[in-house]
Length: 154
Image 1 (cartoon, helix red, strand yellow):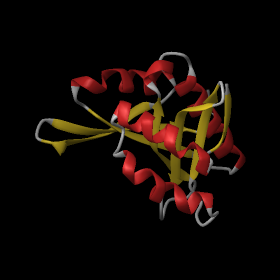
Image 2: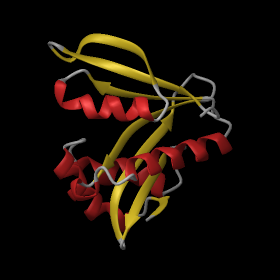
Image 3: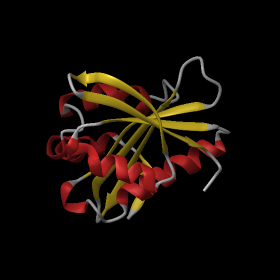
Image 4: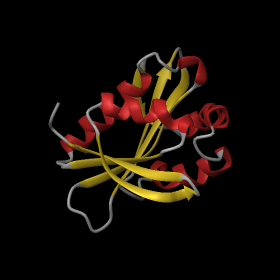
């Protein structure tokens, strides 16, 4: 397994991952990734490569108007590789990169829906704590939960 910056050649495999996981619509990926590939913004896109195939992704960007705060907007692992440590490796690699940039805080949003129980548990295992909840954000009865982590701490 290798964690590296995303490349244009990763797009087809990452789109398959997105279709499997329904993280976000896969047809959005090329346009979302294009500024990063062109070095046109500060976004970070990481790919977890396993046996030559892009099998995980992590996407984060700095929060505008906040000093040293980054938002992890996507973290996904191909279904066949879930529960293998790829998500943890991607999250740790992102944190290491952010620490080198002297970032202070990393946030991530998820849903209160039952289907996101494992995501919430994953973030807690990675040292994030629930910091905020906005009721009915995603849909009626589906709250937005924001997790928070100070960088540089265990």
